[in-house]
Image (cartoon, rainbow, N blue to C red; front, side, top):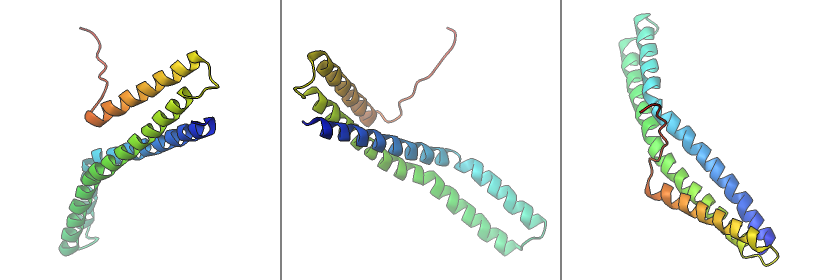
Length: 144
């Protein structure tokens, strides 16, 4: 593979993976904070009703809107998170192709080829690990 094509695969793969990962983190954060938002919106709705800013009918309509928005906030985390995970894997595939392209280049010395091949293997391992195990996390503990 030509060096320019491998370089393009690496750059596009990094950009795609970073952007999709950021979208996934924002979506997850939104889903995790949906209950906090609902509590705040319920409190605000009750305060407006008690202060007489609107009547009981509007209070009930706003309550239904709050419930619907809360459910949407929780469920979008699944849909957008899974779609972003697929896009991250596409970015990792482009990274893998780019590093394999560098490893098969004849103008590079053997030590650099092995380094590129090792990095490609690590990218493939990370891609497989994150595909099969979706809730990977590092837990830091102190003491025995």
